[in-house]
Structure formats: C-alpha cells, structure tokens
Image 1 (cartoon, helix red, strand yellow):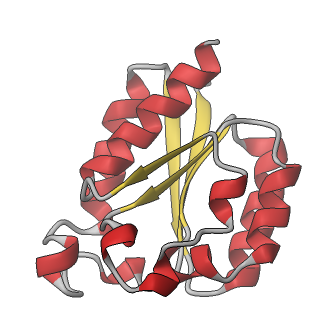
Image 2: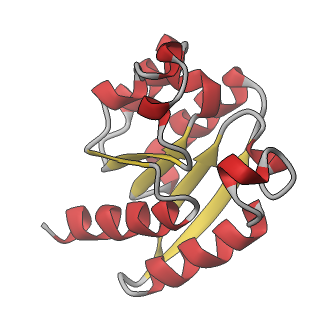
Length: 146
C-alpha cells in the first residue's frame, strides 16, 4: 500500500471556485485533490484530502496523522494567523510539513503577513494558485526521499 500524504484545508477552502474567483481562481477543492493525487503518484504515495471550518477538527486530524501519514500539506486558511493549537499539533508530527496558500498573503492585509504554521513548516508555498498544492506535494515527496 502506498504511503499517504495528508492534505488539510482550513476554513472557507470548501468554497474554492465560488469564493472570490479573482483572488482564488475557479478551480475547486476536487480539482486540487486530483492535482495532488497526480503529484503524489510520482513518489509512490497516495493522498487523503480533508477540509474543515473547525480548528479542533484540524488539530484532531494532525494528531491522527502521526500514525497514518508520512507527510502533511496544510492550507490552514485564516487559522494560519491565529492558531497556536494547530502549530502545537504540527510540532508533534514527525514527518515533513508544507504550508500552502493559494493567494499571496504578503500582498494582502497586514494581519495576514504572519503565520504561526510557518514556524513548523519545512517549506512554504505562497501565491501560486491551486498549482501551489502540486508544488507542496512534490516538496513533501522530495523531503521523504532524503
């Protein structure tokens, strides 16, 4: 069985393709799942895509990933800027973690310029649209090969 890379998405990412398409594009989370699966196949990995608008659910999934995933790609959405709980959970995960943001958070409101998750991330991919998820999966795969 292939190793699994967990793809976690925070609040409002279930609205990709509908929410502010000028900023986030018109691709959906289903499109992201296909992109990630394709990228992971090059590393003989599978992906599991999850999304929640609830911080505690994301924390539970990160904790569970300690036993079920070899790496995590996470777009924490607005929790990037507020969640020490997600950061603490990620510190317990021993595999590679790559943070991804569809938009360039540094070109947006100043409160979006800081991410707690970045303190744990092995790489951060920002502003590449949904293509950034594919880059993130590729980076997890490369880190797993080391």
